[in-house]
Image 1: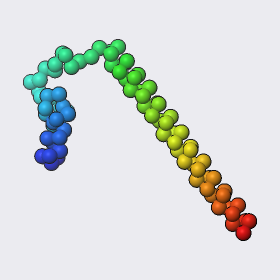
Image 2: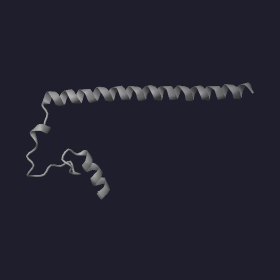
Image 3: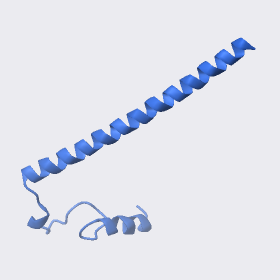
Image 4: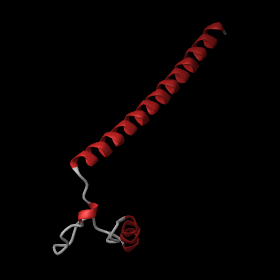
Length: 82
């Protein structure tokens, strides 16, 4: 990876390292670990949020399809009338 990308990724890591891998001597920080219940709750919240976003995108796509179909039908009707 390029140096700039490594620096940018390092800003988002809690330990400042660009790689997501731990060092061999890094025993893992117990503060960064979460219980199974916390992980499940966080995952469920993310999934619920994703479901809402997918529903919103689906609604927008359905609306767009409706507008395009309406425009096509309008054009066909106008050409038949002329």
